Image 1 (cartoon, rainbow, N blue to C red):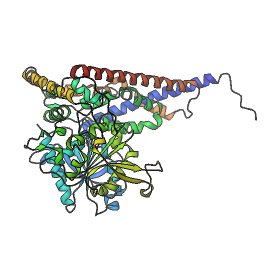
Image 2 (image 1 turned 60 degrees about the vertical axis):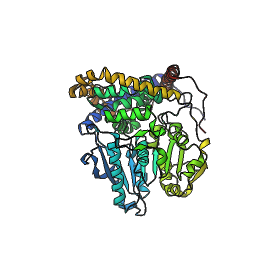
Image 3 (image 1 turned 90 degrees about the vertical axis):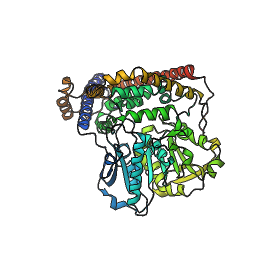
Image 4 (image 1 turned 90 degrees about the horizontal axis):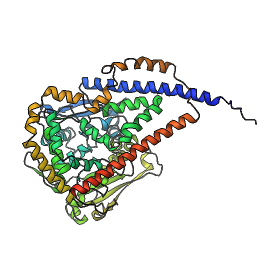
Length: 563
């Protein structure tokens, strides 16, 4: 059969088609950034409500408590067209899902149907969600938040015949719930901590960039300084900026090129996620400095030295309810070592753990990233479903340390219950994980204390005297994390006024045929080279930070691998 003849001028047609497609994608890409900016402005104007994909009822508002906090307890009532009563199992205890308060707003645990909230409701559990408001109450403390969370837990327990709720904490919320379980009153229901750091000094030789960066700016004083500039409020945009700095290749290029290259299919997903990612929530000066000083720098939670405002000293050995820790090797914010090493410190041997009558289980995903632990549909359909379906089995285990293993021969995260198996395999604490010596971090703690004292005695009175609500709002609006987004709105940038009608014109005349030939391949190759250069740059940066840390605070230590 004769092959179809190729025109010698076909490359010119390919080049023309590529230019048209590239120009159209550019217009639609700019219009998407414009929509993101407008969504961000509108979201702030509306008070940044939680971005839950479900209907809910307000149960308790902690702003009305005797000791107020900017938290509230919601009851999830409906998922799309499925009401709670359609899948509710009255024999199951309530589940309280708490999202992290680390710069973003609430909603990552209930971002879509295939999420922690959605899977929990489909498993028949009554679901409660702890949300928080954009601004903290004046001088709000961690103790105030813990008191509010305890009232929420007691209320859910009361509403369900005294059944102790299952507490589901993501990232920052995980260590908050762990503190709640370890405080002087304790808890009775199981706690699931997803991507939650509890061992802040645990590290390998190469170090964790997030862990090291705080030491290189001198410790807690910088958080207090930024709070003073904010007139007593710490802007959560600084925390989100730190997250983006961990992976500049993705923040600066990969996620935007993915949008540009797949503009016809990725636009809605991009806008949905960015609505949450660009909703920056604040913390009080008391909250951020307590967290940095006592946890990230002081490591007092693992050491049993964290003292709350009510005089209670937190000791993780006092936890009596079962714990399940979900970590991932792909998590560069809370690697497994920081999620698990505290167990070795609190219980030096497996026998000590058993004699304490405690049951701790852990599960490690091989590659999902930090946000993927909470937001990935695949993780929700398999790991979180498996946790909820086997939490009773975990509660009935004998005291000890266990690894939760999911055996799924199908490879399909949406497999039926009878197509996968969960095992709780007993482990020895001695074989769990090790860390480099912590002496350098103890030096960091002392340096941080000295720098903070120096700042409080010298610059702080001047900064507080000059700061006011107007200057704080100006700094908030001009923050690079906001300005880099809002600058694409026609409400801020008049040069964007024409983008919307150009995008409408492109959509009406969008090229149906994908361009072929060498140019699309060259575009992808160029993108890969740019991404590789940014990854290499961040690797050099991380290595430089590690070397600087070693020179400033201590030597290099032999690398210990996670087992």
